[in-house]
Image (cartoon, rainbow, N blue to C red; front, side, top):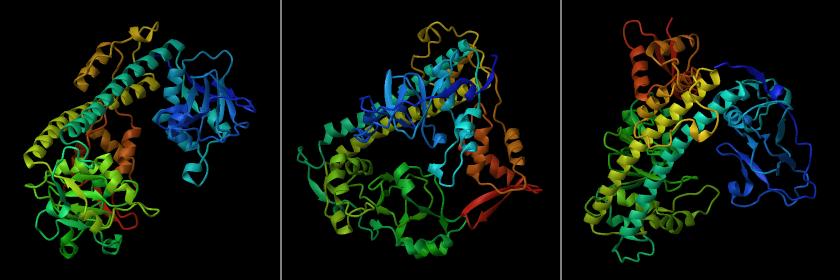
Length: 510
């Protein structure tokens, strides 16, 4: 593919000089995720001032740039002949004689690659108030292939986006299936129209001393006591994301023994006690590291003969239950879980344990399918990232992709059960050409480029993303390769604990 390079200033010129004044127009706002949308869609209502006379008119097919631009708040207005946007936004229009495909330009200007360029040119000390000057914006160079290739690229990426959207919808439908199954089997856990027996939390937990335990006071877990490895400190992140691979803070054995009343074991339920994620919860899986909860968690150890953990999670997460017992108790600037006496007095529906277990078995099957769909979604998103990177570098062979109509280009609408099959279809259509593959040798090159400074695992991941590999390595694979470089008589890497940042950092040995 022949790839030309143009400055944004060669393609666009300033617009947005016309104000709304007394006329009425649709009000639009720009978002990171969805681009330019109707303000009522974003906020469920109009939040613009009733006086929009100073708002800028944006005509159809003009480019709107918000701030901070490196978050991807840039998009074309393609919905209305005329709409209005905040006077804080910049508006640009195509120069006369410029032939381009807006779908292609939109995808590039909102891409991760473009956002990194914006970030490098932004000015200002406050993160979300940093901006880019008009001159710097217009000086940015972007790939600008011939119009037919722009159309082909936009079409290939559109088809991949449709597959991703379809997979996301499948995952959403599985979530809705479980919610509807719960309603059919148990009804509303607050109204209890099915007449289930009600029990208080103390009747549902084990008889052990610490079956219902709030985390220790914050003073017991100051950052200066944390160590490089030892017993894990469980945090809100575990309850929120159900991610038990997350490991940030550790305490030594002496501190663990001191705080053993707060220890965590498989099967415990961790509940977030404060903040915007109040009431989020998850079940500690088998194989979880030994450790303790921090001050922001509540630990519940259920009696399995009385209540199934999965059933408990669905009751506790039910909107009606949360509205009555959790969110209605917010009484301060920072939302907090109700006091322990109130928690202990909550009524839980308690169907026969056999029925609870039956529901848990259904959840397990659906979650297994959801995990496969999620893995497929990750593969599709990685493939999309690879396609777009290669497209913007001019590395895709688009000779077999017709230009006439989007629906005639490539048939990618069918259900793709495995990510590899999609890769095969795209390759068979000559859409994907060879590109740099990730390998341990490539990893070593990147690491050696960091010689002379310390770096965290996260910063190394950032460097890998910049390398634009066809596929990023799996987290566990990368971790094993790093550990390997720390071993032996002449290891490539050393690791130390940064006391200021409170994290492990790596460095290249001389």
